[in-house]
Image (cartoon, rainbow, N blue to C red):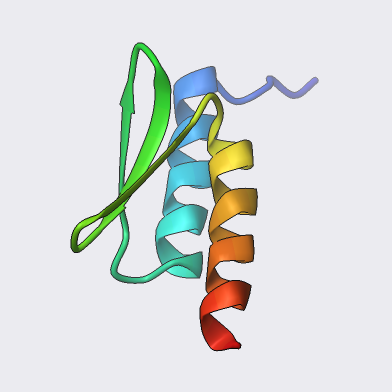
Length: 64
């Protein structure tokens, strides 16, 4: 029988993935959700998944 990983472990892995996917961005969590910071840009969303989706859109828009 296997045990499920702890929520802290899963969140740490997701945070590591986000850091690899978006180099140069730092991620913070507080009572209002997750914030990504890069230079003077700050983006906040209620979940890390929503924040990563927004960063993908932001990255695609900057490439144009």
